[in-house]
Image (cartoon, rainbow, N blue to C red; front, top):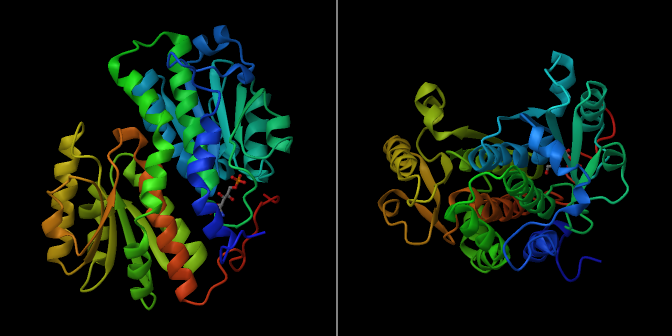
Length: 369
Ligand code: M6R
């Protein structure tokens, strides 16, 4: 069943290019327009939406955090992202103009289900992004956009995460399309790049040996920190979550700009810090800022693991370990940047003798609140 792989997780990591391509299949036509007829929410209703609220847990929540950047940038609709387990207990402001997006691989997560029920009681429309046909969350939603990752067996989510991102990008672009957001060159470029992105994911997978070697060399560490900015911040959170659940290590993700507000006090000689670097093109201001963040932590003894785009030379002098990822549009970078972090956590956990498919204390779907 594992198709020759040592674990389901390794198999599922390797399946990501196909999962991404399958999730896009039939949803972008030859002219570069999106066809999401399955959404079933009439375009008239989508045009009236004045707020998007994303609810999800764990890895799916991280996909939601990334979606916020895309939705707000491409559609200018305000977007909030909330942990499903917190959502209904704080009396959130919801009405029929609010589009609630519930993201769940299993479709059975109780926290997410209760959040969407609460949203529907307040009259909001709920769109599910889900990987499991006919599961409870899509059944109870107004509409569903299925991710086509195929069955995900390992407890740690990998291919479902990448396809959740793809689905979120599609929803964001589709909202822009039906609302007639000015369809500039950027959007056309993004749609074109999205339709080719599975090749970039494949490319990353072919360059992972140094990441595995590095992971093995860090097996005795107690702590690993992850830093990112912009969409790289949720990627950092996801990298830390993977390491916690698989390697049982203390791992934390921070927004790099927050370092100076506290976390930099954690940095000491030899501490591994993984940094997800945004593209030097486009948002070059944050790129420059993160380069100074890398300098700052390195000056305090951190062992820096830098994940940066091909051709980004500014990071080279400060990287103890450099992991190259293909050039992508800024907002799509998580699709390639998350992959080395999955491989890193899987290899490190294996080196520590842990069972990667079935980590202690965890279940694949969490059906209790
Ligand atoms: O099935 P769901 O997507 O609703 O699950 C949500 C989380 O429980 C899940 O992503 C969890 O965080 C993973 N084990 C992370 O790898």
